[in-house]
Length: 265
Image (cartoon, rainbow, N blue to C red; front, side, top):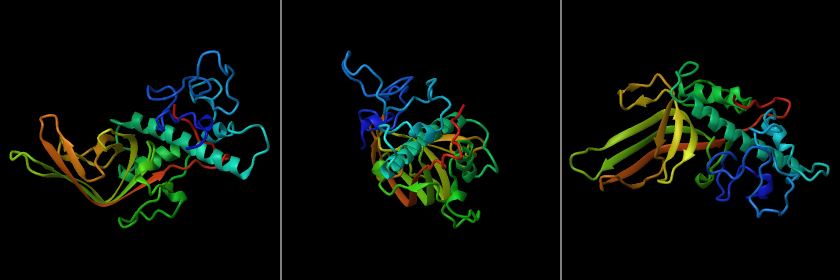
């Protein structure tokens, strides 16, 4: 973890959180770590304006990242730090934009790809076709940004790509049989929250609506169990979780400064 002064949207628990959120660490204006009253009263010159502040409202993630530094000429390390901060900012915007789309009609051709592509392009970020030619074939596994192989480091705002992915649930009650959730052979979704029970909250389209037993016509917020394990239920019973297939996580990537990243309204 870097210097907290350069990562104002990382709270004391190391979680990515908007400064205004209950789990965040700041508020409107320049965000900084809490400290005793009367000490270091001035704003840290390396802190970054909150996106909701008058100073930061009209800045792009990369322009916000330009605030990182000590006033000296930029070094390669400074430039790399700015890129990392821009991508952290972008993850926040992706999460916000995705949450706001839940319940709305499916976008584009209503394929799963179109949701991620729309969110990223609306924010001026790189999409799958910036990393490789999108063929539209079922055997292509889309690349959405910087691959994160360490699942402990995935974060809200990440893009998820599935290949033949299936989650099987087996209750330990005789009156309930096993059931499955299939995302494949190819599927894409957006991570918006990591849950205490080990599951993820995701936003997706072109997915089965279990309540209506048909393909959903709207953008859905769903729970994703992506790791095998056991879960205790409210009635005292337990649920065995098994997974198969492949899943990839990608951090979204902000485009260079000349291609401005727009903040969601």
